[in-house]
Image 1: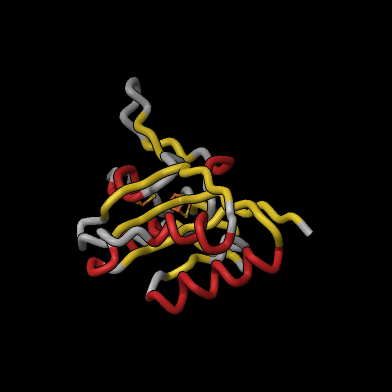
Image 2 (image 1 turned 45 degrees about the horizontal axis):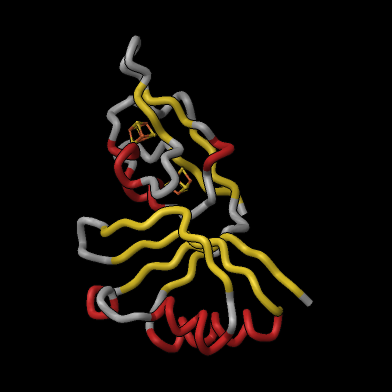
Length: 136
Ligand code: SF4
Ligand code: SF4
């Protein structure tokens, strides 16, 4: 059965240079589409991928990633902003891998476009007043 999922992968520093994604293609015949790639301030690699393939091979590929030490984020969580708490400090803008936050050039307020959010949770810890909330 074919599957297609959007996932967030976090690579510890020691894995950043290794061809992990290449192995997914070669060994598990998975197709991928990189939606976003970045290196966090902690030198951790962060990759947002759309991964497609046969369900069995997909599961094996995910197992391979986890064994290699890659952290895989669950995308089943719903992230919202508590408007009363947000101070529009902008700390979330650079951490979001999908660009769900942007600065309104007129008001300098931070706009949250929740349709771009993939639920990775990075903004939850980055937000000083804890305005970003996760609902499972
Ligand atoms: S980090 Fe938190 S308080 Fe600052 S702009 Fe983003 S959501 Fe608002
Ligand atoms: S959880 Fe936060 S950082 Fe992650 S995609 Fe959604 S808005 Fe961006």
